[in-house]
Amino acid sequence: MAGVLTAWFLRQRGAKVLLLEADRLAGGQTRNTTAKITAQHGMIYERLSEQKGELAARQYASANQRAVEAYRRLVRERKIPCEWEDCPAFLYSTQEEDPVRQEAHTAARLGLECSFTLETELPFPVKGAARLEGQARFHPLRFLGALAEELEVFEHSRVIAAEGGALRTERGRVKAEQVVFTTHYPFINVPGLYFLRMHQERSYVLALRGAARLKGMYYGTDPDGVSLRPCGDLLLLGGGKHRTGENSAGGRYRGLEEQAERLFPGASQAAHWSAQDCISIDGVPYIGPYASAAPNWYVATGFGKWGMTGSMVSALLLSGLLTGERDPDGAVFDPGRMDLRASAANLWEDGKQAVKGLCRSAFEPPRAAVEALTPGHGGIVEVEGEKLGVYKTEDGEVFTVSARCPHLGCQVEWNPDEKTWDCPCHGSRFDFHGRLLDGPAQKGL
Ligand SMILES: Cc1cc2nc3c(=O)[nH]c(=O)nc-3n(C[C@H](O)[C@H](O)[C@H](O)COP(=O)(O)OP(=O)(O)OC[C@H]3O[C@@H](n4cnc5c(N)ncnc54)[C@H](O)[C@@H]3O)c2cc1C
Ligand code: FES
Image (cartoon, rainbow, N blue to C red; front, side, top):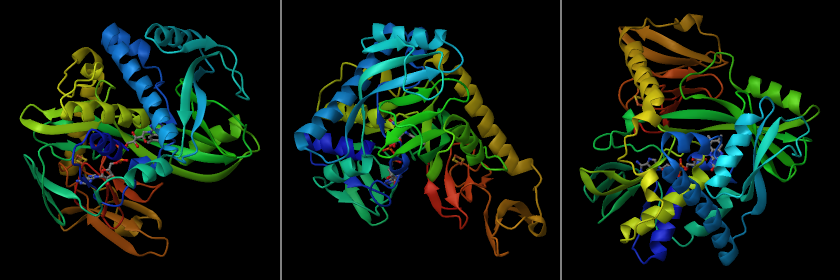
C-alpha cells in the first residue's frame, strides 16, 4: 500500500516513477490487512501527548485524519469500486472506564471528532468507549488494483543492492535520482540501522459467519481485547498479537477461537489468516529521509498495524518532500528522531531479543532429534555440528534448512500455525523449504 500510493502521488506531481516489486503487486502484508481506515490507533493520543508533547500528538492526529480524507476524496473523484463504507471507529473497554474516557478527551483536544460514550452496538456490556466520527473501511486490493493501472510497475524485480541511485534487481539495473524504500521492513541495514529500532509482531484474524451485524469498527483496549470489523455478511475478529518468532507449541488460533465462542456464541468460522507489521521503538512510523548518510533515499515503515492511514500519510508526506514541499505535520514521523522517553522500553526489549536470538544460535543445545519429531511438526536438530531446522510432514517426509537467519544470524523458530520458520530478532519468515516469505532478510535459509 505504501509503495503504490507513494508512486501514484509522485506521478500526480509530475515525477517519472518506477515501482519495483520483489514478487507480485499487493502480495505483502497489505493482502492480509483488515483495512480499517482510521486515525484511531489504539490508546495512542494520551501516550503521545504525555511522552512527546502536545505538538507532536497534534501532528500525528492531523496527518492521520488528513489521510482518511485523502482516501475518501480519491475514491469519490476516481469512482474507485472498492467497497468503501463510511463509519465511526470505537475504542472500547469491558474492564475500565477512565482510560477510554481520558483517551476520548485527549483525542478531541487534539482536533479529532471524538467523544466518550456508553452506547455501542456490541452484544456484550462495555464500561465505556471512545467514538471517532468520519472513519471508513474498504477493500484494499480492489483499491490498489485501480491505482496500479496508472503506474509503471515491474513485478518479480527484487532490489538486491542499492548504491546511491543505482539499484540492482534480479532482472536488471535501474538508475534513479531519488529512491523511496517501501519494502515493509527496510532491508538495507547500513546506513539507517532500522534493525536496531524496529521489530515485528504477528496478529490473527477469524472471519465469523452468523455473528453480530455491526455498523462501526471496534478495537478492544483491554489485554485480551479484540478488534472487530464488519465485512459484508462476515465479522472479522482480530487479536492474539505476539512478537514474530515467539510461537506457542499449541498454536495461536485456539485462544482467539475461544474468545469468538464467548463473545459471539453460535457464530461459525468462515476463514482465518494472520499477518505481521513493523513496530518502531516509540510506536510512531518512520517516514522521511532514510539516513543522513544517504541523501537521496527515503523510507516509509514502522506502521504499528495501522498502515492503511500510515501508507497514505507516507504518500502525501514523501511526494511533497521529493518535489520540494514540506508537510506541516512531518516532524513527528522524522526517521532521524531519537526520543529516549518514548523509546526506552522497546529499545531494551529489542536489544534483549537480538542478544537472545544470537546466543540461541551459538550456545543453546538442539531441542530435538529427527526421530523424536512428531509428524506435522518442526524443531531444531544438530547434524554433524551444524544446527538445522527440520520439519517432518504428516507422512514422515523430512525437510531440512539452515537454522541461521540470513539477515543477521539469529536462530529461527518453528511456527506450528503456519508451518514456517520465523526469526524472533526482526521478524523474517521462511517456508519449510527455506524459501523467503517476509523480510528484512532478502534470501532464503
Ligand atoms: C492482522 C493485521 C491487521 C491489520 N489491520 C489493519 C487495519 O485494519 N488498518 C490499518 O491501517 N492497518 C492494519 N494493519 C497494518 C497494515 O496491514 C500494514 O501496516 C500495511 O499493510 C503495510 O503496508 P506496506 O506497503 O508497508 O507493506 P507490504 O504490503 O508488505 O508491501 C511491501 C512490499 O515490498 C515488497 N518488497 C520487499 N522487499 C523488496 C525488495 N528488496 N525489492 C522490491 N520489493 C520488495 C514486498 O514484496 C511487498 O509487496 C494490519 C496488520 C495486521 C498484521
Ligand atoms: S530477521 Fe534479523 S536476524 Fe533474522
